[in-house]
Image (cartoon, rainbow, N blue to C red; front, top):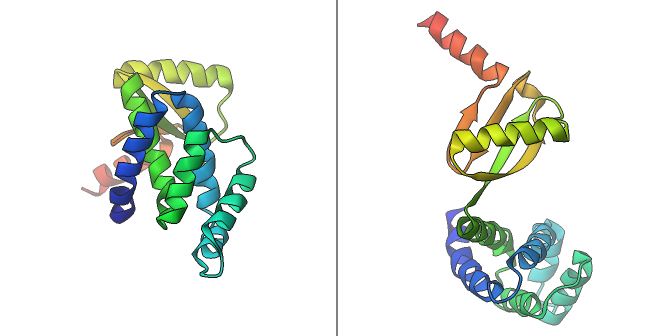
Length: 177
């Protein structure tokens, strides 16, 4: 949703500026944990209830996170709750991570694979992908059995698809042309 991204941008930028004075990686983990909790539909329904105070919402979220929150992250969470922007928290986390990655020269890579990839194989794949994309990558593997075999890699808006399914689709197009 474009509107959430627009709402999230100033929050993420302000949060990142403050996090630079502390520990960006730690704040990133905390914000991601908050985003996971805030993405729960039941929690958002609870938070939207007019009978529930902002303090009660904060207490529920803080206890659900199950990790200690820095004072700055606590203040951020209170601000988000008071302004009724809990639904934007996942987008804030995503944009915060993008800012942190841009500052460190790293990009997130999602590797879709039909089968589980062993850690040693993943390290080799990441090295090859870093050469291919020309930048340092942080990889996350997602199982997608529909690929039949091979992998599909998404880095930002770039896609490298070497899956069997993609090859079959290309053959189908070539044969039907």
